[in-house]
Image (cartoon, rainbow, N blue to C red; front, side):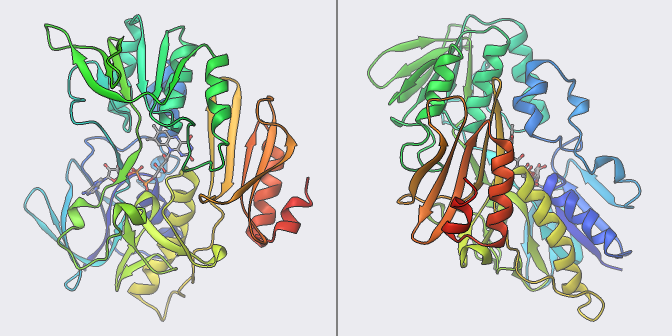
Length: 409
Ligand SMILES: Cc1cc2nc3c(=O)[nH]c(=O)nc-3n(C[C@H](O)[C@H](O)[C@H](O)COP(=O)(O)OP(=O)(O)OC[C@H]3O[C@@H](n4cnc5c(N)ncnc54)[C@H](O)[C@@H]3O)c2cc1C
């Protein structure tokens, strides 16, 4: 009997497996991932594990303990290399070919890097191994850590390094951090937060080269104005790219970087007959946002899409037995912990959406900003207002109508 093949054993893939088993699928499942160990849950990697508060083992994926009960043929250390969409088969980099009953694409993202970010002492952070490598160098108490990029990964690394008592310089090329995620200049509070936390924040700072010493070890970063910021440890936190290279020759439709990247699916997460995409890699028209195409790199999205994708793929296997769950409607949601602050955002703002402060004020230690697009509330951003954000999220999952969400404040 052909297996349901899941490429990627992280949050999206594992939750898809859990969902398929919960729905009663008892056929074979093959789960492949190039990671030599079961991928870790990623949020603690910039927080508790990097801080040295948790051992890596504690950052197990929520579903990992149930894997044995799910009776999965787990193949670690092997990557999916090609996909035959018409024949439903996955080519692996060990030279084998898996004929599949259906295929789930859960290959997520990889860290974006810089061409010269190869010397010892320069890091990106995506996996448990990345985290331990960086943590090992932080344990040696370098005089300064330079973080390139003030996005969420870079900002969390900077905050964690400060909590370890290290000197940190954070370089951000734009004049305001997070301009794409928080339009209308709302990311300015992040720079303030980090300055209060003791980080040397440089906005409009463009790294030109990562420098090395005579031994080939990282020694600093040269900016485009010629200034050199010395550092034994450099962390490149300039975002992630969807891991779709292996699908380039397939018949699937891949979105260009300008379109947000990823695998194009329909509203139900179906990329082609028998092929479903989930998590960071999926680019789908979100029915709740009137079909706006989204690709969401958030923890909870991978879990929720996994729950949906498991049922969606079963409807491909046997539509008489399993109903098509329909469109995946969702209000994206993420959190970020930095210092003692909790930053949360629900929804998805686009450039041009108008930020409206509805509680507190940016610059204070608590506030809520809603984003308005015509008669819609497209997003809510909160600093240390978790209950308000839960309420906004609940309201938005019912309707994005501005009046309904704004009336909560
Ligand atoms: C350090 C870090 C901290 C984060 N913190 C937060 C947070 O605080 N809040 C939040 O909302 N989100 C956070 N995120 C984002 C969140 O973890 C991701 O959105 C989530 O992991 C996505 O799950 P995924 O399964 O889609 O992809 P991934 O977790 O990227 O997993 C994809 C898996 O596919 C495997 N793979 C890749 N290529 C292939 C191939 N060719 N064949 C087979 N397998 C392949 C990879 O090895 C990997 O295990 C964080 C991410 C990182 C990296």
